[in-house]
Amino acid sequence: MSNEIVSGKFGSLSPENYTMELIILCIESGMLSTAKQLEIKKALENEFTETAMQSTRRQSGSISESRAQLLASSVLYRSDVYLLSLRSHEKAASALVNMPMSSILKQGSAEILRLFEESMKIFRNAYNTRINADNHEYRYVTEKAYDEFRRNYSAQFDGAGCPCNIDYPLLGQNACDSKLKGVMFICDYYRCICLENKLCRLFSEADIIRLLESYAHERNDDYRQMYLNIAEVIADNLLGRAIIGKPLALELTENDVKDIESRCKGLTADSITSLLEKGLSAYYKAISSPPLYMYLRQYAPAFAIRLGIAVQSGGTAGVFTVIKA
Image 1: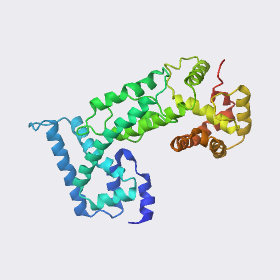
Image 2 (image 1 turned 135 degrees about the vertical axis):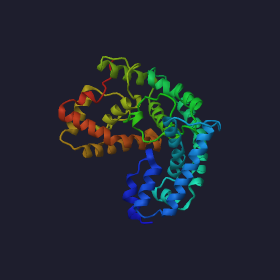
Image 3 (image 1 turned 180 degrees about the vertical axis):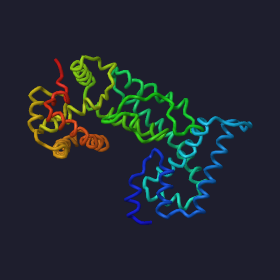
Image 4 (image 1 turned 90 degrees about the horizontal axis):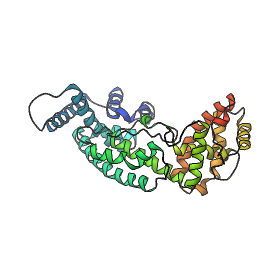
């Protein structure tokens, strides 16, 4: 298999519709024979038929179009989960070409069950490390959402579904922006929550509450009801301090904000990102968690863009939170 093909065309594959996109690219690249294409089609049809029969408890009669689409999506999700578990487009393409599709679907079903059990461990970590911040959405995802998911999830008939109303954003992104579905989404989401809880626990809950109250006060709002990400409010101030070389802490003064603006004036987003990465490196030991450190580094480019725009427009103060006494 050509490395050029893998790194080129395969690089654009999305987790949302992974199997079908991979099939199309493999066909376009001449990797799937006509016979193999027919084998894949037949296996998917057989799996759909069996799933549909199970959903009606093997009673005769038709199912609605919307139900059929849901079941078809669930069948493809089994394949998606297995192929994505290989963590390589090249390995996934090789599996698609060389393995019977029926085996891929069977492996996918097993992987979904494994992830379902793993999700419980991840959630328990998120629950046990949650902070006592009375934000409505944060409390829902750390206390109630997972139970709803586990109680209502159907790996067989709606594997790609997420039967709970998670709306609490993650650092730098809305929950709904994730390309992952079903139990893969749940595992990834709560891993991020665990990292964000770890960030919060670098500081006292009292200091975090003061920060959130000041953040809400600047917006004439109540942090308990606001649509916000707690870790992002923390990270923004932390990154601001990193730019001006201050130790790991939450507090910023108005003079600090002016200093940040002065240092970033005229810089491109890439240059600001470099400043942030250099400043963050000084926090590596204090953060004491390589995964959390990398999580913050991944946020830095998006934050740099937002900060750069604010500096140019004279709105730097709106990016940071000066804690009120």
